[in-house]
Length: 178
Image (tube, rainbow, N blue to C red; front, side, top):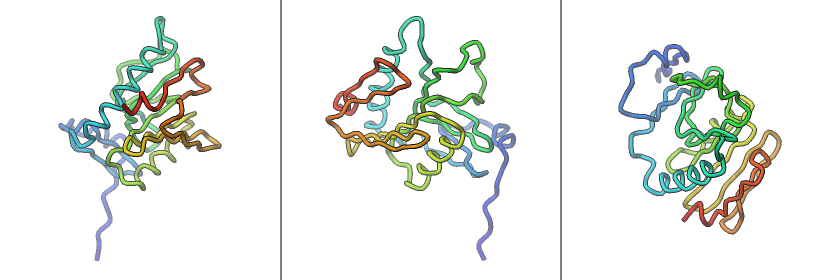
């Protein structure tokens, strides 16, 4: 007979000692760890390309905050988007907490190794929490899926990434995936 997996709470998860794995999440009481370096070079290049374009668009003074691999608490889950943007959050309320409790306006996931079911669970949790826009990049395919609260759209390599949340921001996918 198979035994049931041990489930833990967010408080128990946050009390765990730190590990060498920087990517440890909690979903439905289950710990999910991504080994260090498992993402791969292409993943990191795409993340760097997007971060660079977003940092430039944020400007000085900052119109929004770009966060790399920050932990967010969404109810009983702790997730780490590859990139996240805080546009409406009050910067004075943005601290150096281990896990942020605000909701990012945009969450970005770059697909390199996540099994499809885990990715769909994360997208559902982001939507339930009220994340306005979830961008899922598929570097091997040269495509990008954008999930909003009511729609999903797909962009291909010849398209340009824009967002109603970031007026004036435009990034050709060919530059993002190069």
